[in-house]
Image 1 (tube, rainbow, N blue to C red):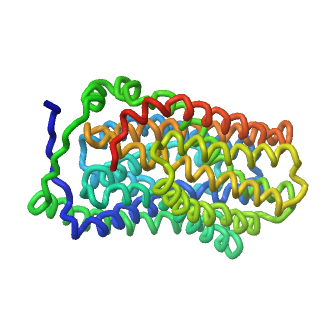
Image 2: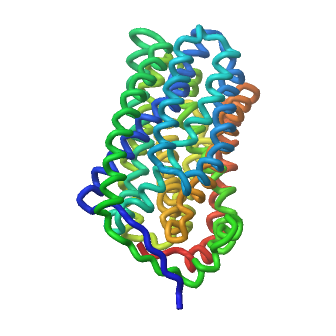
Length: 420
């Protein structure tokens, strides 16, 4: 007889509101992560930072963020998501305030942004647990898929604010505004999440989960879970995915400014094209996944083929035309949204049955941001030494890696995944 588990989930009438609250808190928290990337081009232009120096600040953030994601993933399965998310937002808000008041001191900014990685790591894994385990089954898959929209929405908002503030004031105001937004959001989140926790405890429905034979075999160490489910190499694929996703977004303003002399403010404004199409890509990917994809790793392979193809064309045709370059990078970035939806948002749902949604999310997200760390410094290094064509070739190599690791796990993942 297959093992059966029970857990209490949020009353269905609160499901959409709980999703919006958690997603909104995460978006507010992302202001504290994206503020630096949004003003990096202005820091390079106005404060005399070298590209390698500026990239190192981002690299240290992503290294610490990635390492701490492992810890927050484990804690997320054991500690209330409310406490972790609230602590992460408050801590990041204080450090963004410090960045705005730092006076452009490089050692101070490097230290503050490195510490910011600790608090930012407390946001996504507990949010994924809310979507995968607290929201009732009838709303669960939609919540996890819609969670993918939080990143492009936050990017659009942060880059719009940054573009306006860079034009009228300067980079310091961006950090200060981000801090204020996070402090207000954290207080609201704590109050409302406390209400939903009480309602779940008192009036929540009981969900019964019968484990399959494969899920039962996957219990034990996290390594065993990844091997049995066929997702061990997906961790490597997530590294490459993070490098591509954040590398393109973080360096787009600098790339446009240096290659086409558009100026920092206009370059940041044009970079909003990426998250706008990424947001469209989230819902297009949801539609494609709902109609045609029955295996998330197969879907990842398809999306990576498109992203890699766009980068290959960009490398072969050169980067002499701003419009063509922007179109190709936008196409690649939009396809990466689909791959990100598969790995980061949809795959962890299938581990919720064995109580591993947060842990697996932490592993995948940690790997993703290890890639982000490599991109932040690596793209700056390649572009500074050998030019932007070399930097785009650097990205293309990692697109091929994610494609290959996804193809290798399709069969075993197909046996493990649940029909949700």
